[in-house]
Amino acid sequence: MKDRKKRTGVLLLVLALLIGCLPSTVFGVDTADLQKAAALSAAYMQKAVKDPQPGTVGGEWAILGLARSGIDVPDTYYQRYYSAVEEYVKACDGVLHEKKYTDYSRAIIGLSAIGKDARSVAGYDLTKPLGDYDKTIWQGLNGPIWALIALDSRNYPMPMNPEAKTQATRQMYVDRILACQLPDGGWSLFGGTESAGASDAVADPDITGMALQALAKYMGQPAVAEAVEKALDCMSKRQNADGGYGSWGTTNSESVVQVLVGLCELGIPLDDPRFVKNGHTLLDNVLSYQTANGGFRHTASGDGNSQMSAEQGFYGIVAALRMQQGKSSLYRMSDARTVPDADASETGRGQGLPGKDPAVKNVPVTAPGTTFDDANLNDHVAAIEAMAARGIVTGYPDGTFRPDRTLTRAEFCAMVTAALGLPAESANAFTDTEGHWASGRIAAAYKYGIAAGTGGGKFNPGGTITRQEAAVMVAAAAKLCGMDIERDAVQIRDTLAVFGDYTKSAQWARKFLAFCYDSGILDDSAVNIEPLKAVTRAEVAQMLFNLLGEADLL
Image (cartoon, rainbow, N blue to C red; front, side, top):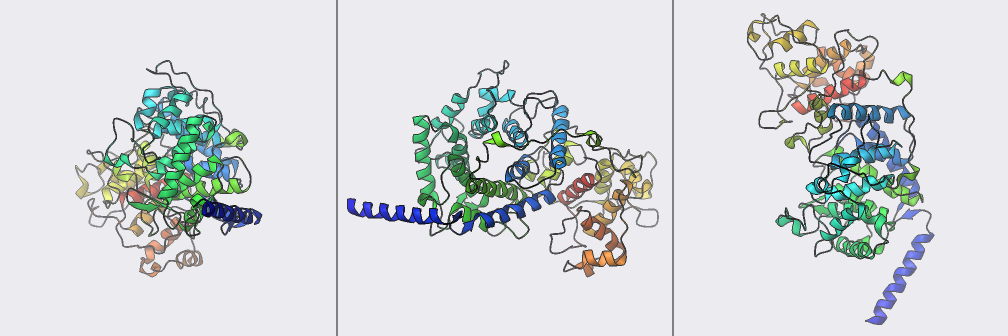
C-alpha cells in the first residue's frame, strides 16, 4: 500500500509539473480563451446593466466583475453607480436595511472595487453597522462571512458602533464561522446555530465556498487552516463528475462559482488534483454555463435567474483570470481602480434629456429596500426593485408582486405615468373609466398621447396589453422624454428582420417596436418578438427601467 501511494504521488507530481510547463493553461482553458470569455461577459453586463443600482441583482456584483476584470469601462459607468448609491443612502437616511446587514457588506464591496471609501457616502459610514455583532449574525453565516469579506476588501479598520449590544471584532466573526462548521467539514446557512433546520445538517457548496473566501486571509491561524483543509476535503468529495456542484437538489452555476472563488482567494490552483473530476476543473464547469451572448445559465437546461447567474458567473471567471495573470485576488482590492469624482457635466445626471416635455420629472427613491419574495428569482428583479423603490410599481396587499401576471390597460397607464412623474388628471376622459381607481392616471396618459381610447368614448381599462401595444405606448412615453422615435422603412426592416416572427406584428406597431429594440428598451437578444402575447408586470417594469435609463431619468 505504501509503495502504491508513493507511485501515485510521483505520478501526480509529474503530471503537475507537466501542466505547469504549459503556457498559462488550466486543462484546456488558456489565458487568451479566458480573456475572451471575460470580455464577452463584460460586454453583456454593460448592456444588461446599463444603469447599475444598489441591489442584489443589477448592482454591486456587476460592478465587482467589471471593475476587477481589467477590461476598459468608462469612468462614467461607475460614476452613475456611485451617484445612485448616494441617492439611495440619502433616501434611507443611512439605514440600508434593519435586519439584512449583508446589504451593507455588498455596498462596501461594490464601492471598494471602484476605489471609493465606504466610510463616507453621502455623509454616512456604511461600515459602522458591521460593528454590531448580534445584528450582523442574524442572517446566519451570510452575515459574518460577508462582513469579513467586505471589511477586508480594502482593509477597513473595524468600525466602532456605540449602539451595538455587542461590539464586534474581526476575530469574533472568524470564530463564529469556525464554530458553525459541520461534522462533514463544510458549512450551511444556519448550521451550528439555534435556527438550524434539517437541511442545514449537510454542507452547502455555496455557503462553504463563501466561508473559504472569508477565511482566506486568516490562514495564519492554526484553527482556520485546519478548518479550511476539512472544508476542502468536503468539497472535493462533493464535487460532481462534470466538475460542478449542486445545491438544494439542483446542479447549478452559482454553486461552482462560489467554490471556485474560494480556491482563488486561497491561492489554490484550479487544476489542483482534488478538484479535477474526469478531466473537468471547476473553471471548465463554470464556462459550460456561459451562453453565446456572454450571460450565464442557472442550470444546464437554462432554468432560473439568468441575470443573477450572469453576474456571479462573470465575477467567477474574473477571479480565475486574475489568478492566471498573477494578480491579486478578486477581494484583495489594494490595487482597485480609482474612479474620479464626477465632473460638472455629470452633476446634472438624472434630470432628463434636453428635449423632454416640461411635465416629465425625475422620480426620486422614496421606498428604498422594497423587495418581493416572489420576484427574487425573476429575471427582471433588478428593474422591479428599482421601480418599486421609486413607487412606480407596487405590490399587492399580501406582499407579493406577481411578476408573471398580465397587465391591464389601466395598470399600464398607472405605471407609465408614474414613471414619468406625470400628475393624475382630475377630468375623466372616457365613459367607462368614471369612478375607476386609475381614472386620473388614464386621463393623464391620454392627455400626453401615451394611450388612446378604443372607440365610442371608451377606454376598456380592464383589457390586457400585448407586447406590441406596450411597445407603442412606451415609445410614446419615450418621445415625451425627448427621445427620437422616428424610423424609416429600411431601419424598421433591418431591426425587425432578425426576429423569426416579426411578420406577425401589426404594421402600425413596427416602427415603435424597432425603436424599442434599437434603444435597448426591449432585449434584442430574444429569438422572437411575440407581439400578440400579453405583457407581464415584470416585463413592463423592465421596459420602464430601461426607458428611464436611456432618458437620463434615473
